[in-house]
Image (cartoon, rainbow, N blue to C red; front, side):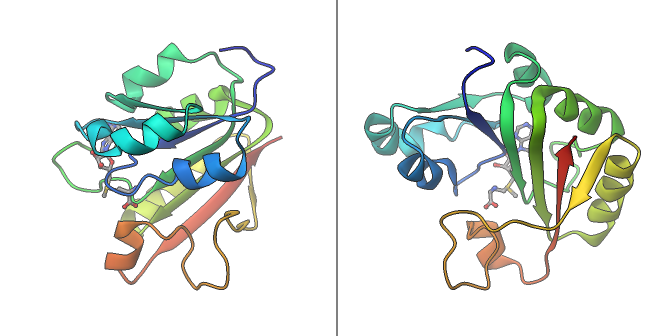
Length: 167
Ligand SMILES: C[S@@+](CC[C@H](N)C(=O)[O-])C[C@H]1O[C@@H](n2cnc3c(N)ncnc32)[C@H](O)[C@@H]1O
């Protein structure tokens, strides 16, 4: 891993990892996914095909420390678990941590169906140096009302979204 590389991270990819769609569009970029549950194996056939995608099982609060700071161009978090099972990791401290792992002009994109979690996340973002920017469509979304087209987005109707940039 070096700071010159173009790289993206998806946190909590679940059963609906978007990284393979992006890897198809950007074959020279590096894509990393981290999920706390053992879900990497379900992507074995895609991982064979896309050598620029790496999936890691682990808690993102620990796993992120294995990357260099200023490393990611874009970080994706779609439908982060809001429940008590894995605890909400998107608090003020962790959003500040994410900020440090982004390159300058790097972006953080979050979608959730939980309004209260969204309000907490928004307040945490506003307490950092992130600048909130208009949502930019993902490259693989065409003619759709869906933002990210993950399983959770298809399952839950209401959704709240935010994109912010490290300036
Ligand atoms: C509700 S699912 C969303 C899956 C997918 N992004 C989607 O939109 O369909 C949330 C995912 O986040 C993962 N997760 C929860 N806490 C985590 C943590 N601390 N670190 C990494 N992944 C986590 C869960 O295991 C789960 O796969």
